[in-house]
Image 1 (spheres, rainbow, N blue to C red):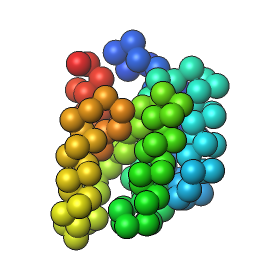
Image 2: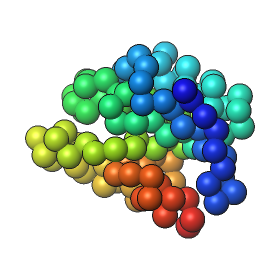
Image 3: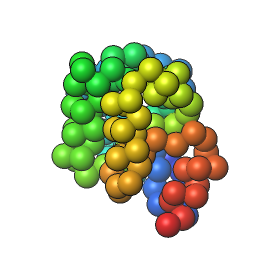
Image 4: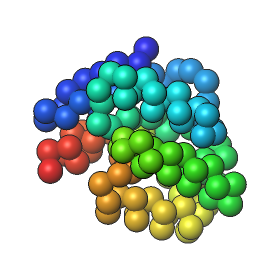
Length: 120
């Protein structure tokens, strides 16, 4: 079940780990709509909810989804271990590193890392 939590005074929408894969702009808009309706500033999507195409940058799925979140001024957090994807793609490793430098899209391993990022 999707829930809204406040972490360090920041409203965060937590997507359920189970559910349909998120693999298109339409899927992203569903998450954005629900998160925005609940007043969230960040949406946390478990890595396992993302369609495999998200992690293949040549498909442009990741870029399209990240851009959709940016357009709606909602932060996106991909939560979980994506090492099997980054091990196979230097482009994806670079993408993750660049995202994590910013304030729009983060890739974090676990809830503790998310907590640390939201403190700052």
